[in-house]
Image (cartoon, rainbow, N blue to C red; front, side):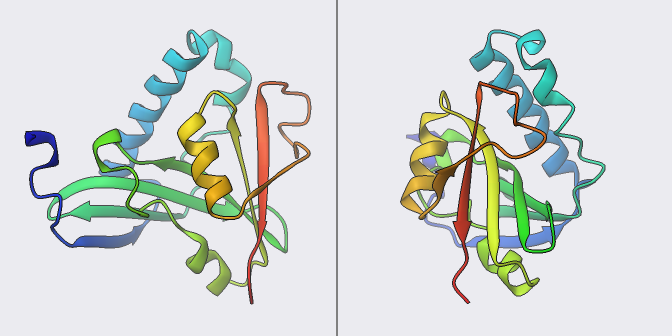
Length: 157
């Protein structure tokens, strides 16, 4: 299969910020994916406002050679918690553990990670559960958003 060409090449991890062109492109791909999943951007109106790249300063880009194959970010939510944002791995590269950002958040002094997704994101929910995340009550700004589901993981010290 040509889509998996070079699949055994070593992964390269690059810390950057929300202005990275590959991260911006992946974020646009994510928006299109979620728009299709939700039946259009109008159905995501309340979610879109919480996905600005301007306040994302801790981005992990994953490359296989020179090809971007994944990204994820975190931002401070409160004194103890980092919130994971913009996690994206194209389908051809999923299932190899490249969507994990926990170590950097822990090293930055956070004791927990929270995140928000939708139940319709079956692969993402399965990944989070497999990594030890548990469903929690929706946190602000997702409290009154019935399509949002939130997860939390306490980080080992």
